[in-house]
Length: 169
Image (cartoon, rainbow, N blue to C red; front, side):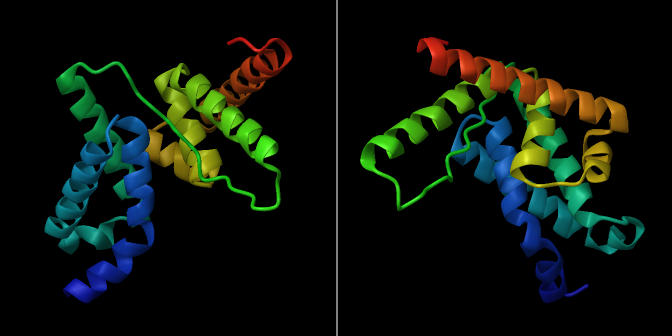
């Protein structure tokens, strides 16, 4: 496999690898390092690509495992998910502040979710993976994926509603 062929396979999902690493690791620098490590491992194993049906799912599984190993080795307990790519130029300044505040609250609520729920939410709602892909990446059965996603969404909805109604977390 040539370098060009490798890049054509890997480049479409390298940003997803980075985003997953960023959600699991605290710092941007660590996420960049993790992404680089994953791409390097893929390059070293490029000759074995034929045996994988979905290289992207394989790369996401590698990323998840690499980041979790890194977190375990540091005994880190602070996983962070921040999703702030929402921007609407037609809203008023006050509305933008409220929306940004809501996004911040959602990020804080997601931080408190159990690890499995965070990963399922990340892969399904942010990365737009299909359930079958999430099952493979996280090595979970279909019911467990759907239950984890449902619980994560319910927790976010309840805590966000509580925050908006009472102004407290």
